[in-house]
Amino acid sequence: MSDLPQRILKNTSERIFTEVFASSDSCLLFAPVRAYSIEPRCGSSKGGTNIKITGTGFTESEKLRARFVYGQQSSEVPCVYENGTLACKTPVFQIADSE
Image (cartoon, rainbow, N blue to C red; front, side, top):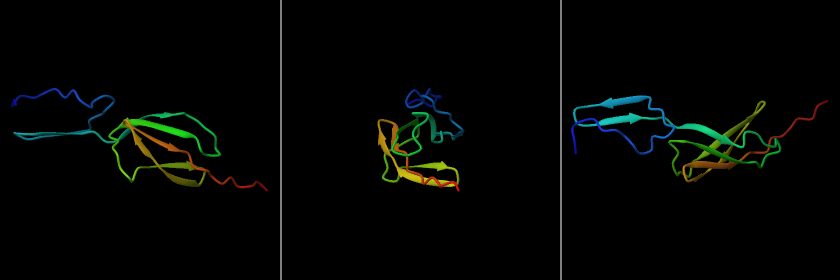
């Protein structure tokens, strides 16, 4: 191991490091969770569209959720972690009848 600075080559694609902390014997880089691609870009407002969110900082967890907003309504749905991406289905929103 060297005391000289080392170039980081792993898991840096599409990451933006916002904080760097260093001491005489260690260094910490902080890169917040960031979504950089959501596919498809649009879908049915009736819900059930499969969504794939690609980003950095995602990890496997039972608590993964995505929030969708339609007008004044919002709904959270569970997500599944698959090879560095999050996958979920859009929720069904109630559309108010116009009078």
